[in-house]
Amino acid sequence: MKTRRHAKILELIKAFDIDTQEELLRYLREEGFDVTQATVSRDIKELRLVKTLSRSGKYKYSTGSESNNDMSAKFYSLFRDSVLSVEAAGNMLVIKCMTGMAQAVCASMDAMHWQNFVGTLAGEDTIFIVCRTDAAAQDAQEEFRKLMGR
Image (tube, rainbow, N blue to C red; front, top):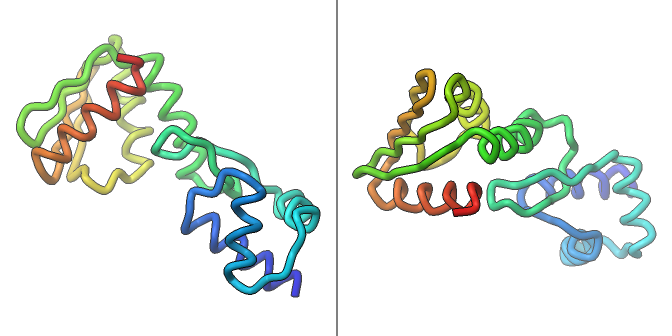
């Protein structure tokens, strides 16, 4: 039963951005597992789950071994510390960075596999991103500006 429950927990944290034990408990109960909060707490410890930053900027449970989650934290940190401006132009984004930082920011961004990005290109201080649509570029611009605190 424990092995099945652990497998279900791993499945759930992959499918949903679960940020509390209570939320995980609710999902498990919906899946037919009759568990207590104490059991969920032990499961989290045994599975060595950690909280990482999601794309939305909220924390969520993950295994911590997923490169996407590792890169997520790196991306948000690099982005906040290095990006100077973000501008949408049609279906493209132009991101200006501190000199020498564009390639690092772009590499961390690529590792996150943004669904609406077709491709990226980084120079010394500028990143070009081709988005699938004009609306996707506008949405990304807004999200990135929020990350910058602007």
